[in-house]
Length: 460
Image (cartoon, rainbow, N blue to C red; front, side, top):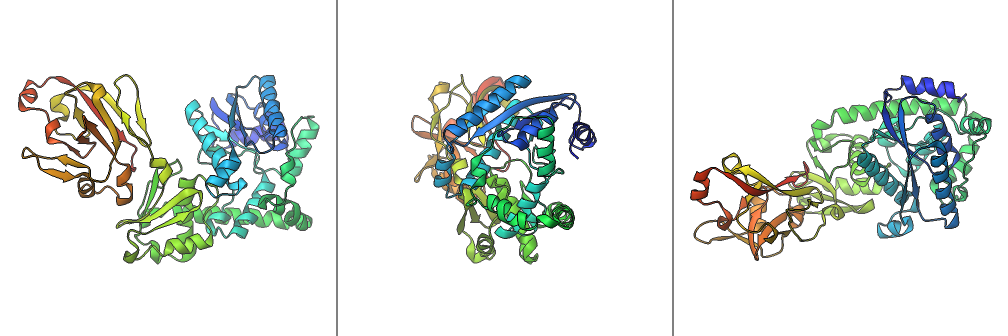
């Protein structure tokens, strides 16, 4: 039975709990998240903020949900953060269902806000019945081994403290404490797969739900989590770079032993990589998995496959890389000494340094002119750079190729120009005309420079 005392004991004994924890509680206004918020208020030494995501799908009802959450937060004395997005438009743009689009954007918004506020976790109200629904959905969609692990109580910046309690226990707690909450009428729409499973499949199993079904699901979860844990601890065998729980600009899967694994293990590896790039909780379909396997052979080098949520799988010489083109897109910008020069996955900054400390480091461009005269942009067809005193020009694309920049990412690599001349390929080469003279070097003095930093793993 769910009670304040039982919940407190659970929290204080959990691996994720520690004093002075900062938790962002995701609240839809429904009974699950309302009960979760009410319970978390009972936990000592916990700093709480509330976040509400408005999908703009239900008109006046959405507005009322938002107002309800604002009032709840005010009554409890917690800050409330509101995120609003046109999910229908996002779904159409990315060829996703409304369920998928909502999941992607919520997760992205919650994690961004968590990082922005320097919070430890996002808390959500999933419960044991959600666990059953998720496993059945995963089986239906063919998610393989990855789907058998279900929902974790704590992973990837999320905690789900209600996961061991049933919907009936949560409803009973709400009634006992006379909690007010909102009811989302769209939960009755069985055109959504989860709602269909909840309305039709689960009731058909209801006789066994507290006995055989629950025992079976718990067994599946234990085995699935164990298998997936073994897969993740063995990923070095397939040379997975950047394979981690936080968001990465791309995931590079070196082929290694990957083609030699039996199919369920291969699929689990692809599922995990896809989840990290797409921010989707589920893996890829069987059809997409078969398409990815077609990239194993050397004859597939240079080919690519489009996956859901605008993820591209590209076969280069090193293996298969998953990335999103939209994450790399940026436009030309004049660099400014008075503001941050930030772009997707890299940034520039003006600084002052001793020449001898970095004189031969291509991560620095020594500023000989007005700082505002430098401009950064993406590489364009025909771009060339003067590389020696003879005035010899070399194609920027060839320079990038010799530096082993991934072929499919060359078009996004930043270069710097001044008065129409290319003077710097950050981290790789400085144009001969922009090199510091021997006289200046001999002075060994402090000098203004521009330096840059890529997010690890972006262009390798």
